[in-house]
Structure formats: structure tokens, C-alpha cells
Length: 347
Image 1 (cartoon, helix red, strand yellow):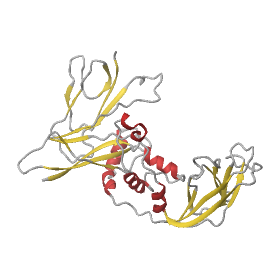
Image 2 (image 1 turned 120 degrees about the horizontal axis):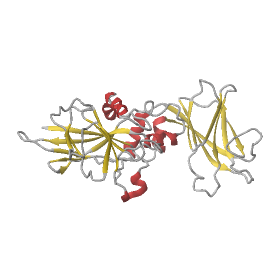
Image 3 (image 1 turned 45 degrees about the horizontal axis):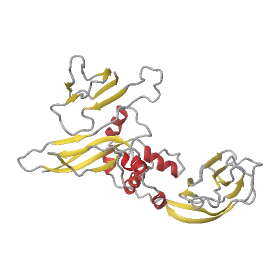
Image 4 (image 1 turned 180 degrees about the horizontal axis):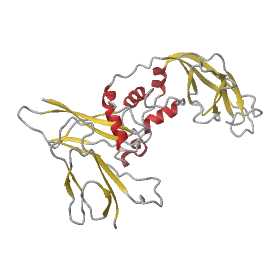
């Protein structure tokens, strides 16, 4: 009989540490599926529980949305940056705005402002030096579901784009074309920015492919990604660092009449309070686990054990460990959803 094993674990594309799944000591070939839900920072087990109960695993298996919404793309090329003493020469694009104006996404633009009463919106970017490695970077305005009625280009001495700070001689060629949201995102989406990419062999962090990252991005639009996020660089970064549940999946074949011992090993760094200076949480490391969240199995026995306890002192817990009495292994109650342990160094 073949069964699919699924082991959920928390993480992000940026810092991904999958479990190791083995059957009778042999490593299983596991596929890592990113969940869709989450936020930039999940801070409690209840938040993870809400994701599981919200069918996050099913969403991870769902068909990739087509993202076939039509868009009009305005590509700004052949930039002219005049000689001047301006601190940060800037190109700004201003266009009429109303509640009916198509939503505008940007790539390569850094500034944004809107005056709802006056009825205009502005997007801007700093003009690079001609010999800058970023001189040829894409700079795009993407009108979703329509086109801009009109727009004007104006140079400014800096990114404030204030009246009286106009800068003459700034110009750009504008290439306008039709596309779809999916095609634009596919062209611009980078591979995930990960610890593994930054530090290579110096980290145990894993990397997922650009294809998996892009699929997760497509699933996240309209759900996990904030609706008011208009800079595509911010969207890519959000999906990259967003805390979520990942699922390690492996298919296991059990011969008729036989049994297989399956093990899952997941090293996990302790949690700690980043803002704990001068409080009772200073120097405390936290560990926690859930006993049955999202599981399709009915466990008959679960046990927790501590190893290498010589240099720790328990501060708070609900396991029932007693280091003074040598009690470092305890049975867990199946109906107890959540266990926690907080320790500090004693030496």
C-alpha cells in the first residue's frame, strides 16, 4: 500500500530548514510545498493553527491562478539626466487619479504620492548616473485592467518633487504595450532571496526554485499579499520573507503484511523575545510543540525528552520535567493541544 506522508513545518523562503524524513533508516525523497497563508511575522501557535484550520494544505495543492487580467505597461527607457548640482535628480510621472482610475503597479520606481482632492497621483524614481550598473534597470508603470488617460513627465532636483524644485532637461522614451498581469510578473519575478544564496555552504538553509516561488506568488495575490502593496519589489520581498507553513511530502510504499518505521527529524532554533532588554524574558530561550494540530493520525503514545541539560535551568513549562529529580522524559497527554518550555543558561 502506498501512503503520502506530510510533515508541516514553519519557515520562509528566506530561511528554510526542512525536516529529514526516513523510512527504516533510508531517506525519503520529499517534495516541499509552500503554504499560502501567513503574515510577515507569525508570533503564536494559535496563528499557525488558524492557517491549518483554514485549509492551507489544500491551498498549497490548488491550481495556479492564470492571472490573465489585461494590463497596459509603460516602460521608461533612454533616460536623460542633465548636468546639474541637484542632490538627487528625479523623474516623476503624474497622471489623473479618481476612484475609477486603474490600479497602478510599479517596478523600478521608488517614490509615490497621491492627492485625492486635487485628483492626481505621482510615481517617481531617482535618475541613475549614465555609467551606473542600474542605468538599464527596468522602470515600469503597470496599469491593471485598463490604461492611463494621460500622463506628464517632469524632472525634479530630488525625490520630494516639490513645486519650485523642477529640473529642466530630464526626459525618457516611453514604450507602451499590452500584456497580462501573469506575463508581467513572470518576466520580473526573481528567484527567492535566501540565506543559502547569500552564504552558500556556510548555512544549512535550503533553497526552493524560482518556479515554486513564482507559483506561491500567484497563489498569494489577493490573499496573503496586502492589497495596497503597489511596488512589485515589495511584493516579491513580502512573499520571500513571509512566515508560512511549508509541507514536506513523501510517498511511502508499505509491503503487504509488513510495517515500516518512519522518522522525522527537524532541528529547530529556540525562539526568543527580541525586545526583552531589562525584562524578565532576558536570556530566555523558548521551545514549543503541538500534539495533534492538522494531523490525520490518532496517536496512542507521545513522549518528550530533554538531552544535554547540564547547562540549562527551566524557567517556565507545562511538560512536567524536573531536572533536580532527574526527570527528563515525560509522556504527553493526547488531548493537550500545546506544550511549551522556556529555559536559560545556568553556567
